[in-house]
Length: 604
Image 1 (cartoon, one colour):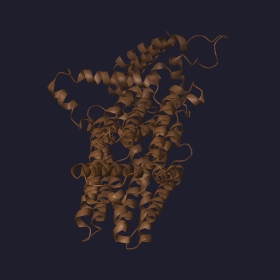
Image 2: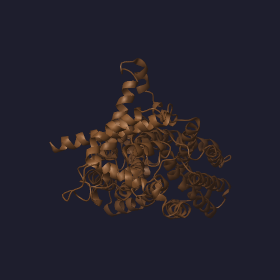
Image 3: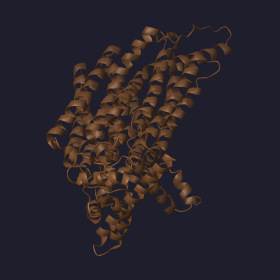
Image 4: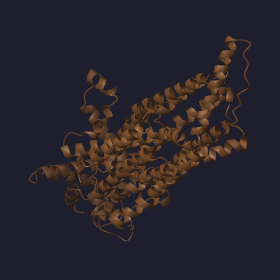
């Protein structure tokens, strides 16, 4: 009964917020029109008697936690008077600290997940090689009864008998199929999961992504433990399940959406930077820890069990301990708006709507908004920022293996030298994200930047950081092109690592262009672009390297540098202080014209 009452209160609050927002829109259209004022008075009717009730000795000094309407108005009023409360977290002000959302709840479990993500890369490739080699050898013995081969053990050591072209070719094709399956399915589901997180909360979607990863790890363990029952192709089903649940790309996007909910716009680049720092630290340290675990146990599968345990712990921690960043009120507003948009689109039986439902690129329409509140400048900004973000992500994904292969060919690097290079570049990147970006943000925006809680588009500082990051990336890849010694290659990698501050700032700048209830949808659309880049970029750049190696081997780095040069030029097309002013998307943000007019109408 209590839960039903609470749900009704949240629904009522959502209706009040929506009516107030519409009133602000009406006032902006025509100050003579009294429709907006009547709507606000109607919405106020449920709270006027409470606000204007004479005070008595029995009245509490603070609003009761279950009096949602009173608490909402009071906090709103506090925001207008310069309170440090951020609009996105004001619904949680009446709760104790351990029930309020914060990025610090997410950083520790997210870091553990990145350790598992980074630590599983090398053991997984080694396991694929062993499984496919075993299958190939068994096929050869079936064709030739006199064919013999040594037992293939999953102890982390190389099998010399597997170093043959036939096995290497099968492993390359298998890995390609797995990445294609996971990438394409992730591209389809990423926008949908991002939009769902706007309506049903971030935690549920983050847990869904981990469930897909767990399913993939379980199938991998089954295939390695019982190869006679579970053929190696069962692992492809694991790739499919991981892709259907969004894969790691959606986990990263929704974690950024969580940070958006509880971080003021002026500080989002720093918050996103912390998540990126966790990612690069996990990728750098994970393989080292995985190597130690496999060496200590003498069993490759031990790392898979460790990763499985980390993902189970991650789900438990997110589900039971981490507070949800979207309040019930904001979820109801988003659901109501989605239902209105769906009904306005016409019956689902319409064949046009059915075609739109299966259109892979249809979720990208959020990058080209139409209607009230939008503008050509807004559309140019969103497309330009998304394009730069995708190009930077694509280059990072496409150049990861090419750099190591190139250094092995050009400088004779082995495992130790490659590990040192990865360690130096990732360490420099983490330092830039954890120390340099927060320090520069503090110096430029000042100590009280958290008070500016209004979404007003990306500002000049955001654009300067983005352009600086792309510029340093461009310099680093020019260094790769010209490097003729190992130390010069490492120095170029350290220079390019400064560009790491660009990705979190780009994501933060994108979220500043849309209302809060579209954050998940927007980041889901960028997740679609990232998923496509994850498939296309490595294929294109590896193909360029394969076609030019031994002739002009640096051709691939010339192409990568040109990609950054294009991104640098595109970044100059972004204009500051452009955003989607959409009053129908929920309660207006602090500082908006509609917010001030509604506040005056209700007398706060």
